[in-house]
Each structure stands twice: as C-alpha cells, then as structure tokens.
Length: 337
Ligand code: GAL
Image 1 (cartoon, rainbow, N blue to C red):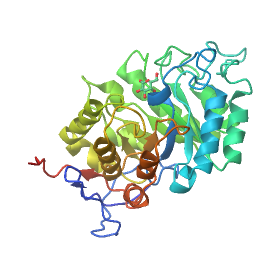
Image 2 (tube, rainbow, N blue to C red; image 1 turned 180 degrees about the vertical axis):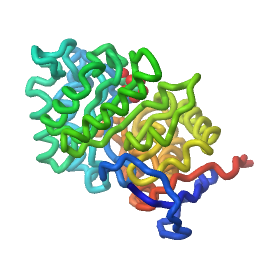
Image 3 (cartoon, rainbow, N blue to C red; image 1 turned 90 degrees about the vertical axis):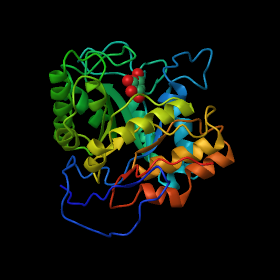
C-alpha cells in the first residue's frame, strides 16, 4: 500500500508537476498492491496504429504478427526508446487463434505467430524489454476472439507460463456490470496467484459508462491503470474529447491516481498522421502532466526525428515519471489572442 499526498495541479496552462517532495502528507489512497507501476507504465501498444490488421499476405509489414513485434523490440533498443524509459512492448487485440486449444488454453494465431507467445516473450526479454498482452473479461474480445469469461485462472496461468509482464484486460461482451466487476476483480487475484509480476491494465470504468458510476476505490485496489473514456484516434478531435472528459470529471479521478494505480487516457498517437506539430507537443505535455501511462502507438520503423525527439524528451518524461505520482488537473481554461 502507498501513502502519498494528492496535491492536484494544473494541466490547462501546461504547468508541470514539481519533482520535489513538497507538501507531503500521509493522506492517500490504496492502489493495487503488486509492487508494479509505481510510476506510469511506459511502452508501445499496437492498437491505434495497426488495429486488427490480419492480412499478412497483402500487408506483411502492417499485420498483427510476430514479425511486427520483433521489429519493434529491436528498434526500441537500437533507437533509444528503452533508454528513454519505454519498456513494455504490448500486443493488443487480434493476436489469438479463433479457438482455444484442446486444454482450453488461449493460443496465438499459428500463421501470424508461428513460434507462439512464449518464444516472443523470450525474445523481448532478451532485449531487456517486457511483453504485454491483451484479453477480455467477457465472452469475446472486442474484435471477436475468445474471451476469458469462465477461464480467468487458466488464462492468468497461461500468461504467466509464457512470461507475460502486462495484461490489458478489455471489457467487451460482458453481460452485466456485476459480472464486469467480478471478472475484473477475479482476474486481478488470479494474476496475483500465479506469483508472476504482471501489470494489470483495466478498462473497467469505461464499460460502466454512461449509466453506472465507477467505484474508484475498488478499481484502484484491483488495477494498475484503468481506461475511463473512449478509444483515442489519430486526430485532434479525439485528443480534445479525452481532455474535455478528463477536466469535466477531474474531481472524481485526479485524487485516485498515484504510485501503483493510474488513470489511463489511452495511447500517445505522436509520430502518426493526424496531429499537427503543436498538437503532438500538446499531447505529450498533457499526458505527462496527467501522470498517464505513456504507451505509444506508432510505427517506430518510420518515425520522424522530430516526433522521436519529442517522445524521448527527458524533461517531459521526468514530469510523467515523478515518483510522487500526483496527477495534474485543469486549474483554468484560457484563450490565446
Ligand atoms: C477497445 C479498446 C481498444 C482496443 C480495442 C481492441 O475496446 O478500448 O483500446 O483494445 O478494443 O479490439
């Protein structure tokens, strides 16, 4: 359990969270007590840039495959991402075969991941990185692959056996808010029981929208980070919507964040096509101030030196990774002339 103060701070005016341990207090909240994500998770996640591209015949360089992740792993090391702090290489939806194996275990698509996930995890670990994977609390993933409902222990153990280091657990195809809550809690405990250190990334509050109010005490007790709002897209509209939701709801969400448990406004889309330079700078600054997980979704094989320098900016990353872990908040909305 952590005991930290929560002094909310500015986001609208791009004020940065101080690095010092000032105004320390012992008032604080409890986060998932697995010793992980003491600062916001940093890494790469395939979804926004590569989505559910299954077509390795036509698009061998853009489909969700072992090759894509091996290439990203190499670049994360050779191009300074790992040194900058981006450690978790994360697989999102669409890695699975359409059916479980004869023992009821999830399996990777044999064409696209011919050597399986354990082999990929070994490779990723050999580079000094960590591997993230994706599953779903309900009957199916959002893209229609096998869900974990009824298989939480099996899937937690499978991921641990493979050497997985992070699980993004989605919330599609779950029949009630009770089974959603039960499933998220159960999986947290199941991961813990495996004895392997696995960061637990939830989408629990997002799937309670718009009719149910999230219980953030529970959510931060069971999850290392949690998505509150819609998926990010490669557009300024999307970034603005996320920021608007965050400021509107800051009273509920800012104080619950801290070492071990973070609000997740979704991926960084810097280095893609939809944001102007100023918009990319703004996303980086505000995600840092919001103490957000910094999970890039871009193509590290073709990223501009400018975007790379922004994503690897040591000072901005230091704000995000401040050990005090206090999320900034919107103090005032201003207009420039
Ligand atoms: C969404 C989720 C996205 C991505 C996608 C995969 O629900 O919010 O981040 O994981 O499912 O199908």
